[in-house]
Length: 96
Image (cartoon, rainbow, N blue to C red; front, side, top):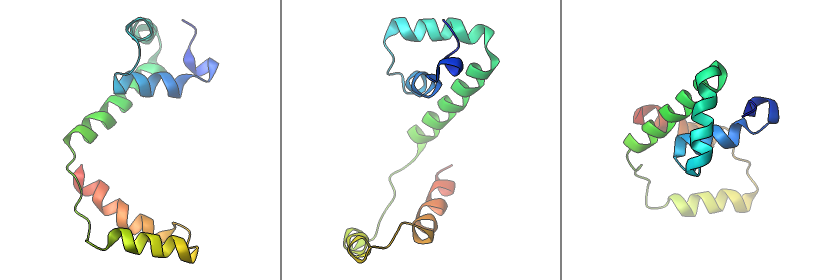
């Protein structure tokens, strides 16, 4: 296997490997490749850590009027800027 980083397929393979969505033959080929490729090994390890964190995360509780407020902001044409980060960042760090 040529290195997926050279072929611009690294995202597809590494994410698929971490999510366990690759077909068995491709997963086996990628595992053989990672034996000699530190960059792909590191990328796969990071992706596995992301999936492990997602598996351990809990559903976030949102306010009863969350959808209404989001759709109001969309209707006003507000771009998801600071308000989105203020809502998501604490929740992400709390879950880890």
